[in-house]
Every structure is written in C-alpha cells, then in structure tokens.
Image (tube, rainbow, N blue to C red; front, side, top):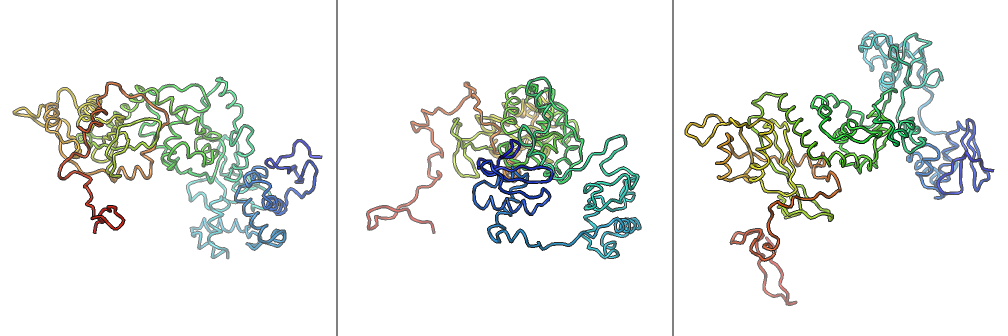
Amino acid sequence: MCPPEAVSIGNSCFAVLISDDTFTYFSNLIPFDSHAADDRTAMLLRIGRLAAISAVSPQELADAFAVSRATVQRARRRYLAEGEAGFMKPRRGRGPSVFTPELAEKATALLASGLSGSAAARVLGVSAPSVNKWRRQGLIGNTEADGEPGRSALAAPPDAGAAPEGRVDEESTGAPGPETAPGLEAQPQTDRSARDRRDRQAPMGRATCDVPARVLASCGQAGPVEPQFAAAARGVRFGGVLAALPALLKEGLLSETGLLPLLPKGYYGLPTILLFLAFMTLARVRNPESLRYQAPGEWGAILGLDRCPEVKTLRRKIALIADDEAGVRAWQLALARRWQGADEPELWATLAIDGHVKVYSGRKGRLPKHFVSREKLCLPASASYWINALGGKPLLCLHKPLDPKMVAAIEADVVPALQELGIVGAGAPDLTAEHPGQPALTLVFDREGWSPDLFRRLARRGVAMFSRWSQENFFKYMRDEFNLDALPTHELEPLDPAAMVVNPLRRAAGSWQWPPAGPHSWPRKRRLRPLDRCGSERPERHR
C-alpha cells in the first residue's frame, strides 16, 4: 500500500516515494513501478510517460520530482517522438571528461609561466573553451598572478567524488578553498539548480527557508531580519545589480531613512524595501506585479535573505510609507540637500523645469483631462514637474494630481521648494530695480511657462527666465525603460476641495471650448463630397 510519506503528483491518482536508493511509483495506493534512485534516464522516462497521457500538468510533475518545467517538456517531447526507445539508446554527446589531476597540475604550471589560456590549451592538446571553463570553476589557474595569494589552483576531477564542483580539496592541497576565509567555516558554493531544488522543498512556501525568523516576525516578536551572506552563490539572476550598491549608498539612499515613517515589526525592514525597489528599477522589473514571474529565491540571494517579499507584502509596505506625506516630503528635501551640497554651487545656479503628463486609464477615480502631445488627444491624467540641473542631475519632482499649469506651478510650488532648499533666499536682488545685479537663479523652461506677469513677479525675487530645449527624449527613455507612467499604487486619494478647476457646468453650456473656436481651430472640419448613389455623404480623402 502507498505509505504516507509518498508525494502525491498533483490531484491525480499517482504518487511517488523517493528514498535513498529507489523511486517507487503508486497508482490508486498500489505500487506499480520502481527504479534505482541514481537512474536519471529511468526517471525521465516515467516523467515523459505521465506528461504524455495528460494526467498531470507539467508544473505538478516538476514540483513532485524537483526538476524544472523545461525538463518535463523535453521528456514529454522525446516520449511522443521516439517512445521508450528514445530513452534507452545512448545519447550523442561528449565522451568521458579529459580533466585529471595530472592535467590540472600541468595547466596550472603553464598558466603560471605566463601563457594565455589558448596557448596552454594547444600545449595540453585540449580545447581553449575547456581551459577557460576550468579556470572559471577554480580547478586550475595561477591565483598568485590574479592577486589572490594563498589560494591553491589544484583540485580533484569533478567525477572523482573527492569534492563538489567549484571547491578545492583542502586535505590534498593544504590551503583553504575559494569559499573559505581565515577564521570562518568553509561554505559550499550553490548553483542555480541547487537553489531551485532547495526553494521548492521549503516548508512554508517557495524559498521560505528561514522558518524560525519568519514565525517570530509574524508574531511581532522579532524583526526586521538583517541581511546575511553566509554561503557563496553563483549564477544568480540579476546579480549584477549589486555592482550599483556603492553608488546607491553614495547617493544617500539609506542615509535619511529616519525621516520616513517606521514600519511595524516584520521580516522585511525599511532598508531592505528601499534597496529592493532600487534593484527592481535597475533590473527593469517595472512594477511589483511583475514579481509573480520572477524567482523569489534569486532575489533573496541578492538581498541576503531567503526570498524577496511577495507582491501584496511589498504593496502594503509602500502604502505605509506613502501615507505619511510629510515624512516623504522631508525625505525628498533631505536627499535634494545632500545632492546639492555634494557638487559645486555653480551647478545649481541654472535649473531646468519640465512638466510630464501621466495618463490614467483606470475607472476607479476621475481626473481632469490634459492634452497629451504624444497621443494628440485630451485624456484623464495627472502632471508632475521635474527640476534638474543642466548637467542632467536630478533635484526635485513635484507631483500634482490637479495640474494648475506651469505658470501657476512655478510660482506656487517650484519657487517655494527652491527657497526651502536655500537656492533662492530673501536677499536675492530685485532684477526690476535700476541696478539689478546678478540673478540668484536662472530657470529654464519651455513656452508653456510664458507669462510676462510671472516674469515680472519672479524678477523681484532675483530669478531670470529664458526658453529651453525639449527634454522629451529623456521622458521617452524613462517611459520605455523605467516604466515612468506606471501607477505607484491602486489606492484612491482625496483631492483638495479648495483647488480651483474649470466649472463642469460652464463647460457643458458651451461657453468654454477646447480647442478654441476660430478659423484655425483644431481639428479642422472635413469637407464632404456630394451625395453618392446611396444617398450618403462621405468625407473627402486627403491626397
């Protein structure tokens, strides 16, 4: 009969019992097949057979046998194309490995003498890619020349059973392995396949390996968990984003977190959330919902945890941070002061202002319509005003759910924010005086901000104005690569009831029109042809 420790394959009547030396298969609690545990070909044959009869889905087979879904699909295609004979015939491929300890010693001596990998391969009579692969795996190589003295380059062959792949046998060499540091215990390297098998067998869900810390965090007794990089890992997807960590820290990503609201006790802390959002942006993961298609254990290896937060957890953390508008505003100004103080004052003497329209296509809320130039339509949208230095360095981004237009935004939002940063002070010269002096600040914007009255008022504060070139290429790049127009949250926010907007009744009465009426109004009326034979009018086509 089927023992209780057998793994059910989905919701079907099949189950498999995996022991140290045997795989036993059950159907309706009765054993019907078995094979040795080390016979991978026999296991693939059973997987292909079960997948071919459509009794179990590929994902359920992958979960039961701890293999990838692609392996299941390949076994199914081979079984359908060749039958059982396709698993019995010898597969074409390379012969036995040519790597031996004697060959490793010779290769290391050749590389230590100054020969390149291709030259050493010609002397040894092997291919250059094989030599390069052995060097990447740490099996051969002149480590003293590479700046790693004390690390041995000799290793046992991968199939000798003396040490796992990528590790060095300390008993045979007398030197610590590549993952061993003085005073620390040796940690084995894990590749992506091993991590995937480990993540699938986690008891609380995919990649939830840190069970004690998660249980305590869920009860509010511990947390947040500090990142730990105890074991070496290789082949981590998106692992290259860690190269940007020094730059993120230098820009002050984690230096002003005390101004943000404190998150409740949990497994993930505020620094982890901020770093994760920054890494997602660098990896072009456009929104939290895209994490459903990512491997959580791989992101956990980057963050120093067992896995990354789920979508609902990340959304909840973002909402808790965004609810404190005063704290977020103080954090934004603190970062702006940090960037401003890190550069020469002359860099911030001229600032470029541009507005960006973010279209809203949902139905939960109602936003006023804006004319979107890239769509040539009036669509519901919100606006944000970006303030950058001429060199492209960012300073501020002011979001406006109700857009007062650039003329009002410059006077009511941009200039007060710059005064709060100390860029424009009370002692700025009056440019309308008889002897105005040098302007304290120069603002650069497009024709949307044209207003002689605004220029006259700003000149009294020591600001000079002139037109600028378009930054649409920058916004197009941000839309395509960093998903600039995505919604940060799906929650609704109440608007300011005292904000001035166009009266909807006046618009409905026809006294307010867009585009303005006139001989050159847009869109132009289409000329109609005379009645055709069917008695209908058709618009004349443009030639």
